[in-house]
Length: 162
Picture 1: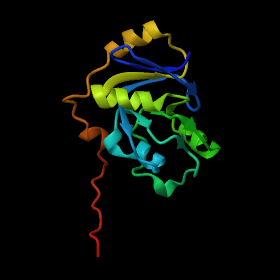
Picture 2: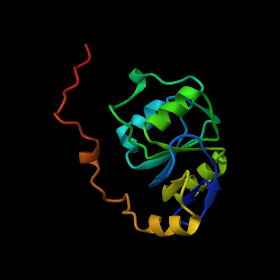
Picture 3: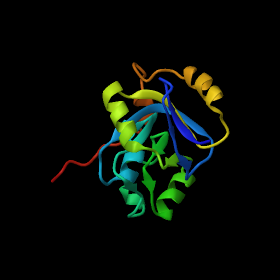
Picture 4: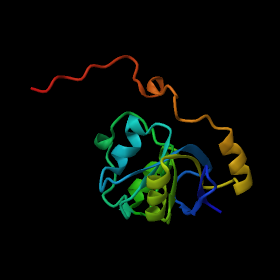
């Protein structure tokens, strides 16, 4: 069984389409209609499991110049319908757990009402009971110092706009 399990015990079933295994993080959503690669590489999504509210994700492919940083920051991706082999291959190559077939509308409503939530996305190898135990061991996002996790070394200066 592959699924997203929220801290409150709510489960959303899905199908794995990228990396195997499981990933812990804070479940959040984005209402962006495009920019899926940008979202996954955006440092503001560090440690998060991102639910895309748009119904189809991946239909225009991927390109290196679309990345917001030099690596991925989101821990997992949740989609109603994953499209395009380039996108799925890119997720797999970057070790991102991704689930398709998720009832994203219900998940977004749940998160909107209850707030972001500690969660685990399971693509393989973990039953629900073990997932609950392992998720409870994860540190909370609140108060975590994440700047070091997303900062570059050496320090880079962006050119001023002309």
